Image (cartoon, rainbow, N blue to C red; front, side, top):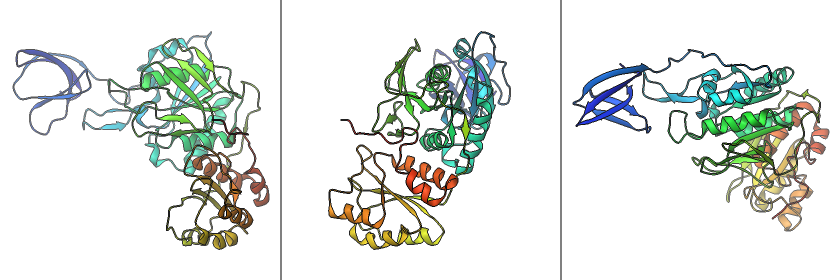
Length: 404
């Protein structure tokens, strides 16, 4: 009966749930509240239904008067549910099934769904970003917007990489979930509906759409190059850093309030620059870290370095000579572990020495964004041009001034 919904009588009460695998011989049910319960003595009253089998693709309704949106699934928690053969939560169901779980989306747009990857986000690699960027590029020629479902742990890396590689005149919205769709506290449905609304709105850039609070009341749309996951498990884990969110989408009304500047729909021409230099490294400085770590990567052919320095952008003084040598043929960008605020290496002696050595101030860029930006620049431009462009604000990754 594994995978079937049943009604039983046990201890004088009636219980309903989905039969889970059991290794003890007892009956284990996943109840509607999301918890599992085991029963040794019970009476089977009725087998109610069988849970949808993996691989079945429900049809999605279409309406000629609605815009058309492409959903590209890459896996992650938003695409995770219980496998009733094993009892484990895995990334296993397709984009069509995501939509069928949220039928209200059919009132917003017509959806075509595609499973590009079925992986957890920690398994994403730069080559995956390139393939995804190419697929989104092709979809944007045909659809009014694109939604990308993605695991939350590295979503800000992928989103920022696509934002640099892909200039889009239409919305490209990354969405994920902190809690899988089979859990009562799942944020998947609300996040997906808010993303659908964004995907047909007046915006033309790459965004990340996630819960704006721990309640089911609104989502924020974050610029892909200014957002970071700031909590391991909270539903409002994603926050805009050194910038305001682009928009707030209220739920369940789905009304959009634009909070800060944005690229408008049709403002930019569609363009793809899909090369990335993978030999770029992000190094977090800590007290006592030897500069040999720089020498190691340099000897392996790395010519792009992003450093997470302390405070305003510092490392220990015994790094200066090594950095001076590396800067002769490499691009070295300084960012801060503080995240909020911006780099200023003109305040203290160490900072001034870093600038003389050739280190470039990363302004208020997040370390992860500086990483994907440098991978993009070294992949598509020559060395000198990359050095110039890394200091410039290309797509909103550098705010002209810091606000408090």
